[in-house]
Amino acid sequence: KKDDKLFKCKEFLEIVENPEIKKILTAYFGREPKLNKKRLNVFYTQNKSGKFKQIKKQGWHMDDPKRFIENPKYNFIKLFIPLCDVTEENGATRIIKGSRENTPPGFVYKDYQGKRVSDDFIYKHYSKDLEIKLESTLGDIFLTRNDGFHKGGYCKSGSRLMVIAQYDVS
Image 1 (tube, one colour):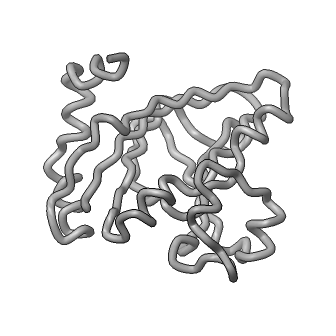
Image 2 (cartoon, helix red, strand yellow; image 1 turned 90 degrees about the vertical axis):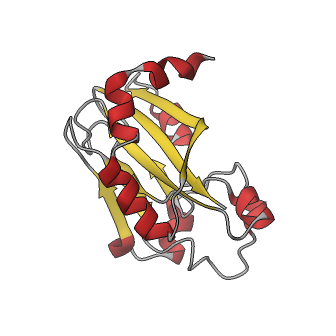
């Protein structure tokens, strides 16, 4: 498989199997999660002067609403490993704090499987004060829940490269 090479990389394993990260995750979940090797992603975004394509690609969405419906005890956290500085200019990830627990009136998870929603939809239902921009510098790592509304920002210039590993409990 294409992603198996990362699991043979000593430096990558030192990060994803780090005892401190596992300790934080175990405390959060109340039990030890498992690294989901099938949910490893490498994301590369660059500015190609095609603003429409980039905005469409980076719409607000929720990860795995179908899995959550099928198993309400399903939980996951993603470990973001930026391989460059990530700023507003090259597309910092944005999340809406509390959006999984506080869904819009009439919201039905299954209707959002694989769908993107607009900024207008998000700001109609959530205060801009709940938006968090996950900017980082090379060498930073961070954990985030992506089962609420989130999106990668628009890459205005340069590029963004990051590895995202997922830990699951169910």
